[in-house]
Image 1 (tube, rainbow, N blue to C red):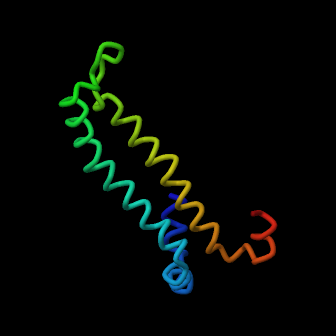
Image 2: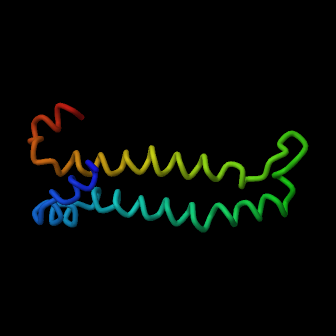
Length: 104
């Protein structure tokens, strides 16, 4: 609920700021890169590890598919919110330059 309120309050000026600043634009693109790697890379990695005999093996009886929920939850809950929070923190009108520099 709070995230949707923040998205609606994101003004036209903030969108221009994100488009102008390469760092903020990369952070938005990085979330899409993470999602595509999870979507396409994890199944490919599971097949590759099974074909080479690395997973499952003697010490590890599980394949990579057992770790899918944990990896997706980590990237969605931790990294996703971290990236979005950092972007909103940089474009937040509450912070001025000096308090942002003091915080860094």
